[in-house]
Length: 313
Length: 295
Image 1: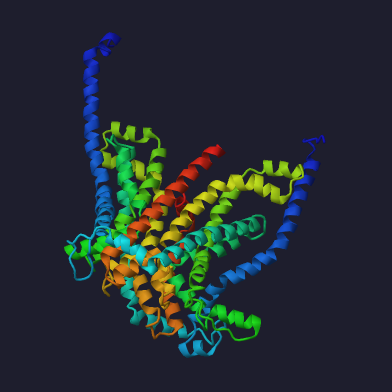
Image 2: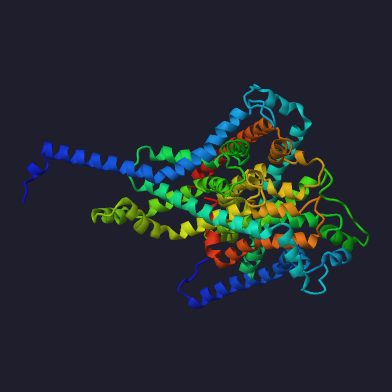
C-alpha cells in the first residue's frame, strides 16, 4: 500500500493535473467534431444570410442591375413613402392581435367547457384534426369555403332564404378577417390542448376551498385559475405572436385573387416585392424591418414570461 | 363542521354526490359543444363530399350536398396527379422530409452530445450561436439564399433545397436534445469510457438509446415542417423536377386554374395523406412533439 504522503506529493498532483488537462484538450478536439456539422450548417445557411440580408438592404440590387451600388438608407426611406407598406404594416398589426386574442379566447372557453364532459378525448381529437393538414392545403379548401358560390355563402343562403354571393376574399373589408378565421380554425386545437394541460396542472384544493367559502365561478376563475394558467397563456401568446407576424402560406394561397394582395401583411409584402417584382434590395429592407419587430416583441414577451414564472414560484 | 374522515360511507356519499353533479353539468353542456363541433368540422365535411363529385356535378349541386356516387374520385385523382405532376412532387417532398429531418436531428444530437457530455470550451457560446438561428423570421433568409444559390448553381437543385431544410431544422432539436441529454446520468458514459469505449461509441450506444422518444418526436415535427413548406421551395426549387408537393398543389389553385374545385380539393387531400398517416400511426410521439414545441 502506498502511504498518503506519497499519493498527495506535489509531484504526483502536478502529474495528475497535467494528465487531466491533456484529456480535456483531447475531449475538446473531439467535441469540435461533434458540433461541427450543426455549427457549419447553421452558420452558412441561416446566420450568413441574415447578415447578408442586412447588407443587401443598403444596396440598389434588383433584377438586371448590379448589387455593387450603394443605396444608403434609400430603401428604408422608400418604405415610409409608399402607401402599400403602411397598409401592410397595419394589417400585420391586425394579424398579430387577432392571432393572439381569438385562439386564446375561443380555446380557453372550449377548454373550460370540455374539461368535465363525457367523450372529452373524442372532442379533443376532432378539434385537433385541422392541425394535421398543411397550411397550403387548408388555404386551398378555405378558398372555396369563402368563394362566391362557396360553403359559407350557401349556409347563409340556407339560413336567410335569400341568395347570397359575397366574395369574402375580394373585399379589403373582409379579406384579413376571413383569413384570420381560417388561421384560428387551424390552430384552435393545439391551443386548446395546451390550455387543457395547463388547467390539469392546477391543484383542485384551493378551488374547492374557495367554493366552500362561497366564491362564485367567476371569482374562482379570476383569482385562482387565471393567475395559475398565466404561464401557459404566455407560451401560447409567444407562439401565436410569431405566427401573426410571419404567416405566409395561408395568405398567399387564399388571397391569390385579391387585387391588393401585397398589402395583406409584411410577410406577403416582402415576398411580393422581392419575388413578383424583383426588387430584391427593397424586399430585404422589408425583411429587416419585419425581423426587428419580431425580435423586439419576442424579447419583451420573454421578459414578461420570466417575471410571471418567478412570481408563481 | 367536524367530519369523521374515517366514516367510509360518508366519504363515499360525498364522492358520489360530486360525481353526479359533474355528470349532470356535463350532460347539459354536450349539446352546445356538439353544435360547435359540427360547425367546426363543416369545412372537412365539404372536403370529404367534394372529392367524390365530378366537375359538372359540383357546378350543378349545392356545395354541401352528397355526391351521386363514389366513383368520380378516381378520375379526380388521375387529373390532379397528371396535371400537377403530383407523383414527382410527392416523391421530392418525401425525400426532402425524410433525409432532411433525419440529418437535422442527427446533427443536432451530435452537437448536443458535444455540448453536454464532452469538455468543450465555450459550450454555451456555441449553443447560443446555433440557437440564434431561431430568432429571425424566415423572410430574412429568402433573398440572400436566392442570391447565393444563383451564384453557386444550387438554385433549382434537389441537393440545394435539402441543405436549407437541414439547416433550418437543426436549432430547435438541439435545444430539446441538450435538455434530454443533460438529464441522463453521468455514470452511464463515465463507466463506458473507463471500459475504453470511444466517444463515438458512447454517443451511439449509451446516450442516443436513452433519448429515442424525444428524437422520434423531433423527427416527426421536422418531417411535417419540411413536407408542409411552401415558402422556401417556391423560391429556391420551383422547377418541375425538384419542386415540392406544396408548390405543385399551389400551382393547381387560384385564378388561372381552369380546373374544377373537385380536382383541387382532391389534390389537397392527396398532399395531406402522409402527415395524416403519420399522425394516426404515431399519435403519441406527435403530441409529445407538439408539446416540445412550447417549451
